[in-house]
Length: 312
Image 1: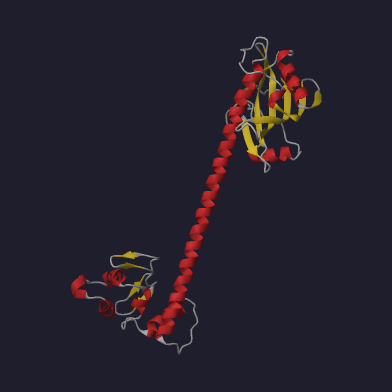
Image 2: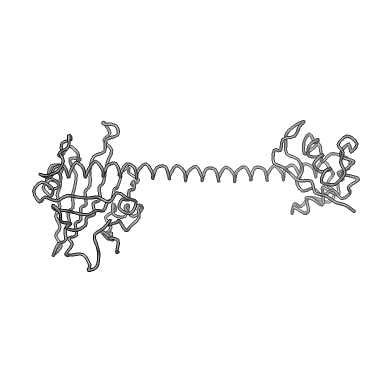
């Protein structure tokens, strides 16, 4: 005895109509399968060909199940196999209604799951694009900032742009920590004071900052309030001497009246002199050792380790 299974495609298109068809409905005899199609016109010679012909020429799932060759007992056994309890005395049209309801639920579930996967993928793509945009903003800002600051050096290449408090918010804050022989900490409030202290490092102390803008040396994130956090590491120089390494974290806020203009709200600068570094560490491409999402912890006031220069 040959047997076959009628598969249930979801909204599968046919030559003469569309709509859901049967799902894994066992038809016990090949001759009954042939009875559902016109074998002389379709050239059906096997159960698989018969099933395919039924799928193609059936107008709808209900029309297929109503055929005389699809017996009530077959539908009853199918529902039982799917774990659907129906009264044994149910008539064929009642069993067909149960099958249609079961298929509709499965189709709705598949569409819902597909939509959830699509929404998740779209959300991930948007988050990735947002992270890329923040990282690009951080890289452009650091390029601009260090070129402008270094241009204030007496021997530096002069910039057409002017350094000053106009690049900072009025209530800007700065924490400056430097460690040469012993650790020192300075705090400054206000755009004028922050701007002047940074300027004095270059103009009066003759320091030059060389940032490492590769992936290891630059990390960026955005807080839930829109504050862009930029962490960058690099080396500090005076003339032809490399004095040590630095890490600088900026908090940037977009100017609401000047389009795509960002001003500095927070500055956290740490400089570690070469004499204060561990023996055996060479000063080449210092890096930020924490990840971008940990910048949020720094913003929340938690202590993070400063630097981890590469060891060679």
